[in-house]
Each structure stands twice: as C-alpha cells, then as structure tokens.
Image 1 (cartoon, helix red, strand yellow):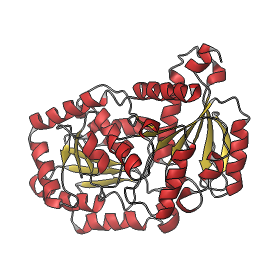
Image 2 (tube, helix red, strand yellow; image 1 turned 135 degrees about the vertical axis):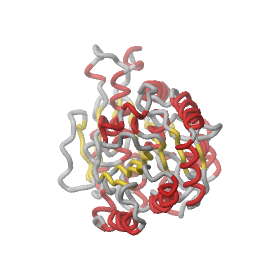
Image 3 (cartoon, rainbow, N blue to C red; image 1 turned 90 degrees about the vertical axis):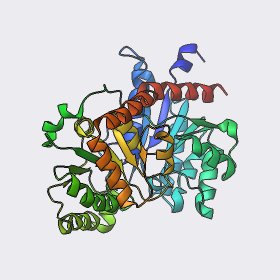
Image 4 (cartoon, rainbow, N blue to C red; image 1 turned 45 degrees about the vertical axis):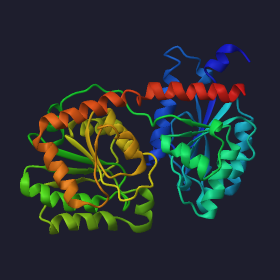
Length: 391
C-alpha cells in the first residue's frame, strides 16, 4: 500500500445521514466534512468518503452525492447486500455510527448481518450504551464490539462501562470527543436582535423534542424565574423527534404548550417548532446567555447539543447525566439535581444577575471546548482509521 493511501484512506461511513432529522445523522455529516477537509482543496477526489445511509422511511431521502448506498433499516436482507457492496468497493476502512434505534430488529440486531459479513476493518462509534442493559441489548452491543477492529466512545466513563459490563478489551477502546464547530468567543448581545430577543436575558434548550428532555421541569422552574426576572425569555428550539411524531403526533408538544399557558408564561417561554439549519442554530446559540439541559435520566453518555453549547462559550446549567458530569467538571458549568425545580430556578436567577460569574463560566467552557472542535476530532479519527488499516 502506498504511503499517501494510508495517510488519506478511503472511508465508508455507515449511519443515518441528512436530510434525515437525527442527531447521529448530523454527527456523521459533520465528521465526513471534517475528514474531507483535512485533505485540503486539492485533495485526491478518489479518496472522498463514501456513505451508506440508513432509511427510516420507505421512500428514502434526497441525499447528497457522497451517499452511494441506501439501507432500509427494517429490511434484514439490505444489511447483507450492503456488506457485499462495501466489500467490493474501494474503501479501506468502515466507520459505523452505532445507536440502537437507527437499525432494524429488536435492539437494532439487524446491523449484525452487515458487520458479520464485512471483510474490511471497522471502527465503530458508540453513541449510546446502558449500564444495566437487558439481555438482548447486552448481546447486540457486545457483538457489535466483537465485530469491530476498534470502538470509539465519547466520554471517559464509557470506557469503564465497556470493560466492566460488556467485557470489551481495553486495548480495543478509544475515547474521542464529540465534535463541535470552531467559532469565536463573542457577546450574546450581538445576536439577540436577529431572533427577536433584544434586551432580554435568554435561556436556550435545543434539539429534537421528546419526553426524555425534561422540559416540564424547566417550565416549572421558569415560573419562579419569571417572578424575579419578568423580562426573561426561555426558548425551546427544535422540531418534535420524528419517531415521536410518527407514533404520537404533536401530543407531547401540545401538552408542554398547555403547561406554559396554564402557568401564565406565554411572554417568558417561546417554542420554535422547526429543525433549523446549521447557520440558524449558530445564531440561536450565539444569542443565548444560558444553555439549559434539564434531562431527567443519568443514562446519557453523549450529547451533541451540550457539546455545541460549550463550543459557543455558553454558561451551562445541567442535570447530572453522565456526559454532563464529565464535560462540566472543574467549574465548566453548573450541575443541579434531577427534577429539582427550585435549584434550577435559583441557579438561573443567580447567573442572570451576576455577569461576572456567568462570564467566568463562559470562558472556562470555551477554553475547554478547543479540544472538541471538528478539525481536531477528525484528525483523531483519521489516525485511528490508519491504525485499523495497518493492523
């Protein structure tokens, strides 16, 4: 193998992919772009990454040109065909993004039909794992790791889970942070007029809306915050998660809106029911004074939205789910107990009234986030791809 081929190997990504609305899809798109950009504007076009996209709807999506293969996630035969296609492709390494829900079968078991038939090295990123899985979840994730040359986790705690719960050898596990955009450190006041929030303290929660976000707790906290700071604005940005929408329609969002109305918070709480572009999300994140993640469960080992908030230098208030505990350690953010409405409200009020404390949090978050930016993350993946090929 020639040296330059190993330096920029041909990679075949297997994942959900935009325009599908899914956090894993967004992650993969950003990683594909970041890896491609490492080659520079005159890079070898024959080494541009390829993508196999998982479809959650029969008609599929209007994908960009790098998607050369589509897999209907509920069709077992598609996974075996995909393995044959990838084996015959010029790709030298496969990068799988794993989250149980994007693959078909119970606990996403269909992905094993692909992995067990691949003849190329596989680097798998694990976006979710359970500390106390049921038997099927345990078997599937352990088999995914067995079929992978290396596995990537997004938090240090996940290394211990893989070793102790799933029996994955330590030498097979690598920790690479979730990527984030490389943006300058700026004042939120520069952007508030662009989202009709000028002159108002702005709190933001973003991402696809579902019942596991803990937004009910945040709305209850806003009742207390509004009494002290009536000009405050809490913005909940994001469309309802497609899986929730298909199963239950807008029932959950409507329940949140009723709660806001009953709490007389219509002036303080605003919903933006849409999946925003990266440019628009930039504006909302830039304008926020506080970023809030009120998630109700500790079993979350990654969060793209929290990663982005740190990269934008936000003062973050969060419940102590696993990923937040790690990223917000050493004073990089504020941790409050799960479901504690009063603690959440008091922390919000304190930070909004104390510019110096809020700015100190912002600077610590921003300084830490320099290790999360996509170019750095892409270089770490590229080094791991080379290592997998060279084994």
